[in-house]
Image (cartoon, rainbow, N blue to C red; front, side, top):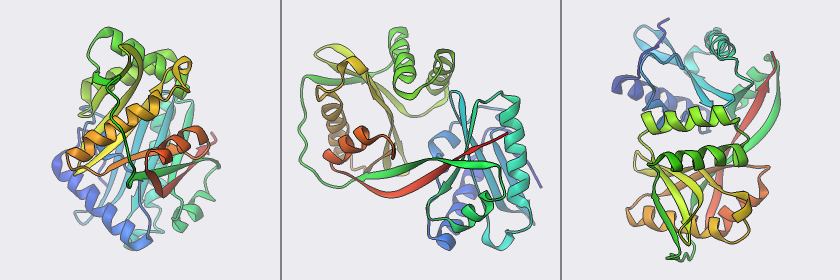
Length: 281
């Protein structure tokens, strides 16, 4: 077994993608491997584990940090299952997460993956949340000139992003600061500040990768919610990305009914879901 601890090379990314396609075709589900994060791993990262047999990648586990929580997602080639490969990788992934004093460890599995559900019965964890992947289909959208998106570049912009992580996503302030700084330093995504009538109202992050546009980290300050700012900002993003020729995707937790309703009103429809299980030490 070889363990990958350096920045991911293009060759390794191709190997991961190839293994992903094999596993998805065999199981009839989709894995959430966060390629936007895999492509911007910092040097000497210990977030990814690899298992090779005869020079072929047959097992992979990725660790994805979001403030005070870590999500773990992985896969094993169908021909190499029931040999303890995934259990071994998971053990090492959990060890690394514990070293970082992670408060919450979530194990990610496609809702439709029966093999994942059977495996998780052997792990001390409980179901936490479901998350929907949504794709924009078709809807009539208007581009409001009073809503603008500008690149997030200044120290003031970073402070706004940090506060939005705390208020909207439950980050601790120091974790939000570290998380957003790492995105600025290493991510290839586009980070925007949403302005309404010239006032900072929220933030949004856009990843254009492999011919698709994904929306992440979308949040509006609580005191400005309920005024249609979020819907108009989201519409502006969809209009721009579709103009570029990209299909547009996003993710939302099932329990967030307000966000789900907003996205549906803009023409997004759920097509896949992921289940998250909270690991118990």
